[in-house]
Image (cartoon, rainbow, N blue to C red; front, side):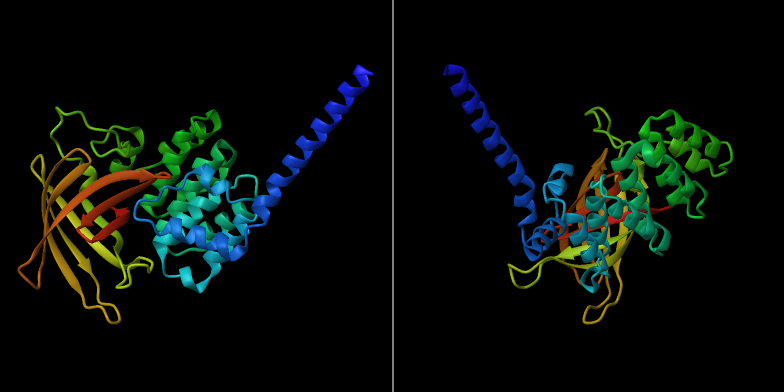
Length: 314
């Protein structure tokens, strides 16, 4: 009698467990598409994104189709920063062959170098050595930054086959600064690490021409953040001084704007002032360098607005 009761209890427990487990994917599947898209849209428009691999995967199996739909939508066609974040999120769905193939198609078809580099970095980070051969194709690109992204992706894999592909490429690469950067011998190498308090030198990574986006709020406090393209030229003076010019080109209903920047910093951080060339007012600015999903990011905070630079062109 006791053994029968014991078997019955086990049977009930197994039924309950199976019922709970079977409901888990259904919960994700029951999220309405519009609600899921709103969740994604909110996260990709944050000034300081808090999304992680687990956050994206937690959206469920239907998420890749929603993300691809957003990427194909005219609403996001001109919003390169948001498109980058969507592609970075899509790359985490490593078990979805449609997601991977879509990203590869985007890398091949796009005319935007920064989009191509985003895909290379995202696939390399999410897929690892499984996609080493695919990543290595971009080592032959005519764009130096694309070659750099591919090489750094292969190097981070720490895989024998990926290392062999990288070594073969390095034996034919002729660009000195690119070789220095990949080999880690350059003073401006891309390993962005915290700087010790005794190091007073401003990172040489800041120097160069950056292409990015000026992000600002709408008049309505509940509206999404708006953006417009901008170009930033920075140069380092001495050990810790930084000067630059930020230009926001003319756009419909938006005049051209130029800001003169002067700042001081240490390591990956700087602070100073920005002056609009058309008036006498000044704004306090703060800037920092970081990497997100393998992509080098420069963020500069202009009080109520933010300039996010996503592309460094040597």
